[in-house]
Length: 252
Image (tube, rainbow, N blue to C red; front, top):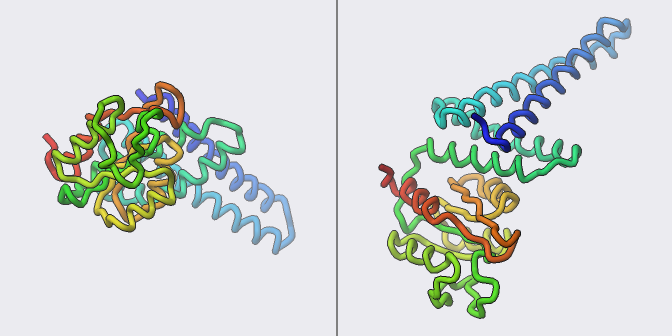
């Protein structure tokens, strides 16, 4: 069974297919009811474009439904979806904005689909080539020892998840950094030059980050927000360790 957010994502894709089919057949109807040659030519072009876009979205819709259901697709379908997912995502976000719906539902499914595609890609790198990128809101808000740019400022008191994340860094010899926003995150990626990224963030920052680093594999992990957004957030440490295992080829 699809989760609620997946259902919203699939429903939006269905709406896009229906929209373009309607536009296409409306153009075809106008062609049949008009005698003007230029007018017919323009409408015929619109009809062909609308049908091609409908087929493009429908093909991806089938692949996405299979991926969400079975967590597995062929390598050809994976490459096709990796190529087209960013275009589908951008248009779904625009439609969601127009309809006044919750964009985080679309962002959440986008991150999940991206993760599934990365997990199917069998990308393996050395531990030191993995960058674990964290949001600063994971640190206890009242902590006086700021760890942005230097994770070693952490006193390992255990009041937030940073201590356990440093343990993972030391256990696997990965890179671990905290960023206050997209600009600093891009700077860290430019300086550390990782071959794979494990990013912890909210839906908005995860989806924009995944789109930013087009050539790098990113596994995104949503942070947990028991006290609301941007303050004292948490992360599932098992998910982070599983992502490390995948990238170093240590999966069971």
